[in-house]
Length: 68
View 1 (cartoon, rainbow, N blue to C red):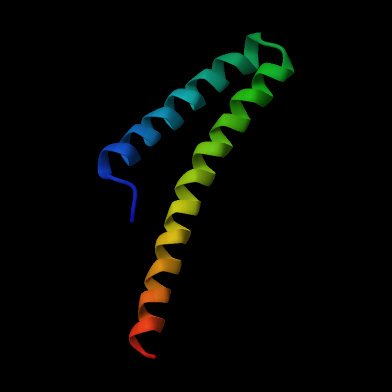
View 2: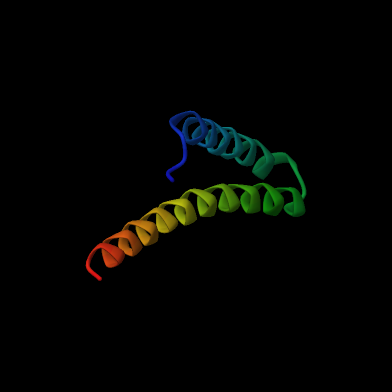
């Protein structure tokens, strides 16, 4: 089951906000803050990728089950 449009849009907004925060943090904050923001960005991206991967696997499984 794919992410709902609302969830995907919210995650896109989160990524945009985190990019903005990272741009400001890069100039003024300690490196640990920059790393933490980058980790959050990576986690959101991974979530979206894993969801797409799971959708693909479910489609493949249903195709396989049909062809049995």
